[in-house]
Each structure stands twice: as structure tokens, then as C-alpha cells.
Image (tube, rainbow, N blue to C red; front, side, top):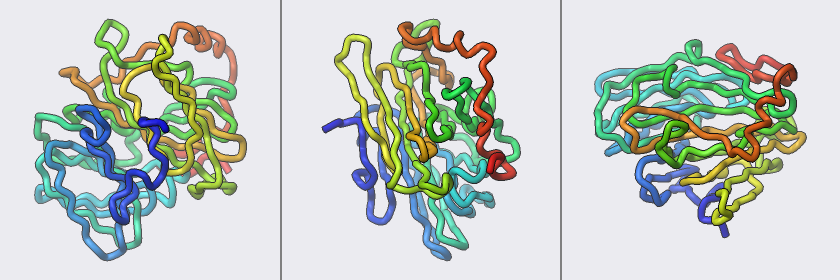
Length: 297
């Protein structure tokens, strides 16, 4: 059994789908919580050593922290809209409230600096289309360097891969500090849409690969809705959405570098594929969403 692949339910904490600290992952920086909010019932989270984003996955919520109040306009599902979000600092008491039942992700990173809490509007989040042809995918850059500078260690983005397409390709890594890459621990949190292309469902599946050049790590797994995959080192990619089942994943990265970065190096065996995309059109289904909702039927 893989120690890196955590199927849905294996990281649950009571009614909450995921509780994963850096210690629980077996590394030093990166973590993830996914909370279920019951309508009309406040939840209090203590961040401790971690900074975090408050990211609605389904539903909307109110965030109260350090005397500030943020109203986050969310979404029906991760396949319907780019969402508002908030940054909350370490050593904070965070109260979350929802008028209707909601599901909220807290991508986290252990950090040393305490910054102020801050609101992020969906309308300000850049939506990028990467790749070409059947390697086209949407990247929602809500918490990455160059877009969101208000964090100490934490980097995060969302990806949507239309059904039948490949993403996280060519395979790449970030486990060395050199002129090409920085060291980052990375979490993949997967949501897979069902037959309607919108509602997350365990019916569908996708594929994920992580490996090292020397073969000491060689993971090829089927991932389903709610699964988590940890990347401590090595090349990772592709992520493949099975025909009929669009794939979403939340990427969370953090590491020891003094400045936040998501720099990586392609696997030299496959990096040439990028050049082959020149002149190839992107999939017309991308982007799938923006702050206004779905951009494709």
C-alpha cells in the first residue's frame, strides 16, 4: 500500500474530510484541512504554527479573525466558479460561519512570520490556460508568487482538467535548490466530477504518477474524489482525467527557501513535449470557470 496516496476517508477527523498536519505527512511545512460547516453553527480553528488560506469548495462562509470580518462568496462546487478566499495568519483564532452547509479547505504551511489577515476577491484571481491540445488545463492562480504576495511560506493554486485531458505534464520536480528549482513539499487534493461534469462523485476516477529517475519511487495510482497524494520528492505528472470525468486538484506547496517560489525542473526525458505544442490550439473547453461562473456549457 502506498504511503503517499491517501484515499478519501483515510485522513478524516470526525465529520471533517481531512486533517493533515506537516507531522502527519512526514515532512516539515505543508498541511491541509477540509472542514464541513453546518448551517448556523460557528466553527473555531486555531492556526498554531501555520498560516492558511480559507478556500470555499462548496458554499460560502463568513471569516472572523483578528477583529476583521470577511464575507467569502463561494460556489456550488469547484467546477462552477472561481471563489473568494481569505488569508489567515499563524497564532490566530479563526471563526467560520455559514448560512447554509458548506465545505471549506484550509491549505496550510508552517511559517515563522505573523502577517495580518487579508481578503482575496474572486474577480482579482488570474485564470490561466496551460498546455495545448489534450494537455490543455485551467490553472487558477489565487495564491501563487507574483499574484498573491501576502504569505510567508504558503503557495497554492487550483487546476481543472477537462475529461480526457492530461495535466501536470511534462513531469516536473522541485526537490533541490539550484538555478532551476527550489525545494517544496507538495500536496495534491483531488475532486472528480460525476456524469454532469459539475457535482463531485466517487463514481469517476483519474490517474496520477510520481517517480524518481533512479526508480526508487514509482507510484502510479487511480485517484477518486476526495483523495490526497503527497509529493515529498521526485517527478510528478501526469494527472489524467478519465473520459467522462473532469478532474480538479488543489496544489499546496511550501518549503525552506527564504522567498516563496514554485520553480521546478522538467524531467529531461519528456521536456521536449513543450516545444511540440507550438502552433497547437488549446482545448476550447478551457478555461472551464472564472469569477462569473462556468465559461463552457
